[in-house]
Amino acid sequence: MPKTPTITPSAAATRLPPWLQAELRSDHAGELGAVEIYQGILRVTRDPAVRSFALDHLATEREHLTIMEGLVAPRFRSRLQWPWRISGWLIGALPAAISSEWVFATIATVETFVDKHYAAQLAQLSASTGEDIPEHIEPLLRRCREDEVQHQRDAAGRLNRRLPLPLRIWLKLVAWGSRSAVSVARIV
Image (cartoon, rainbow, N blue to C red; front, side, top):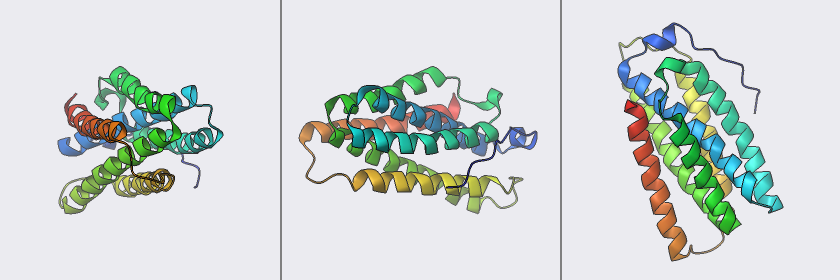
């Protein structure tokens, strides 16, 4: 993947339509949480395969966070950055304390949600005719989505069998938490 250029929030980024500001704020919060997920995994796991997986994906999530920091001026970012960091770290660390299967299933679930989230944003951007939206936003969101789909496929491809009930319950909690976090980040 090509190196992400440093992007700084421009004056145009502060004049985006309110709906897009809210969506990008949720993206920034999500990428902040994603970085923490992988840091949580790395802090806990000793499994070489999980560590390699997490290091690879962490690099991409850091690039995404840099992109979002360029799109969302500091004053428009979520004010709940510490909760996003803590919850992200726990979403990574807790499964890593259990097993690689829990890590890969958790990442597959999170990235499935993120794929749908970015897809909905891209559809809304396509339907937004007549609004003054900078041309560079759509390709950046598309690139982030493509990376997240690759992460989902990588994680899902490492799962071999039917998931146990406690893991399925955990994954439902993670999916619910992801949806809830986006809703909150859009407004706070």
